[in-house]
Length: 194
Image (cartoon, one colour):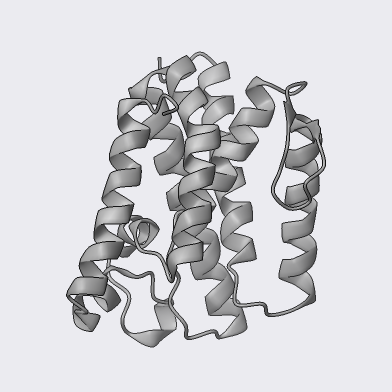
């Protein structure tokens, strides 16, 4: 069994547990209250920019997000410690939510957003920043590449897919998560937040 540090393990167990809870007890009003609703729906609440990250749409969504949390989060938590790791992940989740809220307001989308993907894109950026020359093997495409190139490729793809069409994926939330990680890392590099 690979080592999973405590904060990452707790997040993974919480997301999996919440997913299983809603399968066993399909409480749509509670799920809807926790999802991130666009501002123009009248369903938005102040807690949603955090709670949406712990919900997942289906088993594959959950699996790939937990895999990414383990792949990138475990090492970052080990290097930074739990406090900084949580700060970066929270910043990424919040800026992902803000980016998605702005996008849905501009476009007029009425669908809710769920999942920790925006946080994962923040972790990906942070991993590429910390270990730029580390070779990683993304699942898509399964080609070994340096982490810094993976960050650039995935960031460019998210921007391209976000601009070109509707895929049902929150591409601008992913970019927002990367922005949050970038802001937090630059904050730390400026000597604040230690």
